Length: 249
Length: 221
Image (cartoon, rainbow over all chains, first blue to last red; front, top):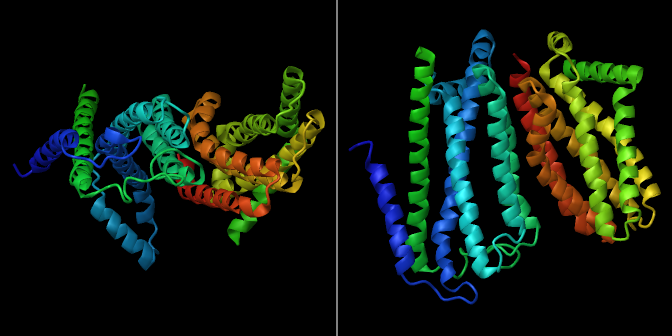
């Protein structure tokens, strides 16, 4: 029960957000009308994706640290700053865990959420903008940032040697992450977009996200992030069991 | 100081090697010229200034991928081991990036000249701003592609991986570049472009910092 409470919480929050999101009242705005309910299903996908990709980058940093460890210990003359950093790393880092598998599985789970985010966005766009894909900057950049992670998976598959694959793909993952942040959070602000929250269009977080919507929106975000983490942890456990079997046989 | 010395020697080495064979610069130059010529033969004239701008950047993108990816993919294992013994990884990366930037600057300048010569139906009204965009493009292409080519060369199979890995990373930069170049094509005042120039500088600094942090791990086998 100790370890499952957050899974129960996640499932109940998602079920609650699905039911309440479709039944509770929403503000009536022009053009948007009832499609405003998509907020409860579209935006949490992106939050879950960002969280999963951040976990992946964090795991990649830790998997690179494994290679660094031996070098740091050899160097005896280390300053206070390095020692503090080392101390923090040893607290976070657990050598028994396979951080490379963590990184790739969180990317796998994150991509699923990213694609779901694109689909929910496209369906919404069909009813408000008139087309599934109208080459809006926000749609394009989201698609490109998912391409980044497909490139990461292709890069992984191109290398056979396990250690080398872990190292090189971790490097690419860390290198690509800032670019994804630029793509998703910086560039859309420079471009004119029809997306809510951009270019003078009313964002959901300004005046029209009233207290009724907040009651559903925040639980939905939390619920989907937890579900994403759950999916990732199950995938990671399956992969590490498979890995162990491969090494034993 | 040790680092600056190493960087200086490594750039000198790169230039010497290039000067002896003149392979990369001539190869990429021929590539750019023949691409522009092929485009000329198929388009004949570009009346629309947006197409003019877009075509130039597409040509530049592919030329720079070909030019910069040589830097690490060209070297064999022995050469890499040799410079690994002699110099620090930071020096190797910085020297390659600076060398590639210089190479790209020469290349893009010649390409822009030839491009305006061939497609003379349109010239940007603000040629200086357009050249600033081209310079920014040379710098950002070389910072991004140098690191990606290092990753691709370590991964083993070069060519295709290079394209797959670099395109999603370069697209945000390319969007900014095209926007900046479009400002020049439209003849807007310089104040409108400071956002893009600043953003490009930030992206470049970010890329260089990430590369410097990550390259030592990649370099060590």
